[in-house]
Image (cartoon, rainbow, N blue to C red; front, side, top):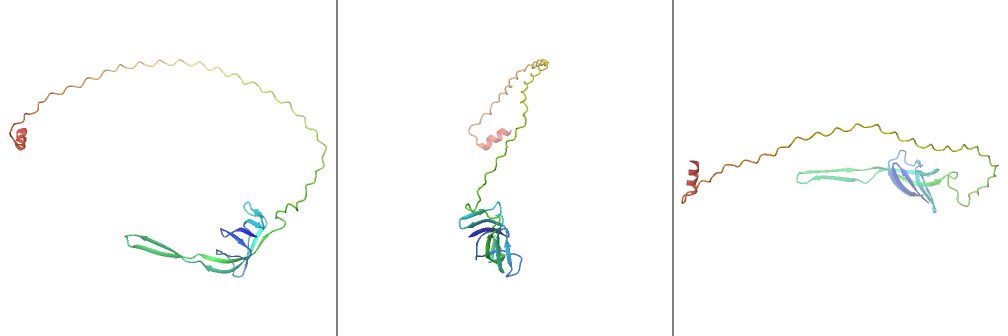
Length: 194
């Protein structure tokens, strides 16, 4: 027989005699604790699934000790910057031993063999049906109203005549200055400046 139970915000699969570590619980060592948030119970093949909890199911346990969990190291580093930082963390835990998994007999599902057979109900005299009103005849839909006469739309205004664009003016012809033969570049620059 096993069960899935929610203890301190976490879900655990537990069996009778099992020891588990859970988040820190209130209570002294050796004290009994009862968990009623049972989500599923499997009793030798008969599975009871809760919606969300199984009605009438509970788990009794005993607190063995309070302790701290293993240290978890957190290391931060930024390379080439000379930054390193190490921190540690230890969870506060409670060690619990499961003593019993119980489903109350009144709320547990009875087996198929134990179910009483449904007795036949005695038939009662048929009551006369109340007089029914005749169905109303659907009225024909009203004729659609004639649309009011609309005013004719004004004629669109004639667009102004588009004048053709003037042809681009021809640029005055410029003649390149004749290059003097036999002169170097420096001399031609002087000639151009003059």
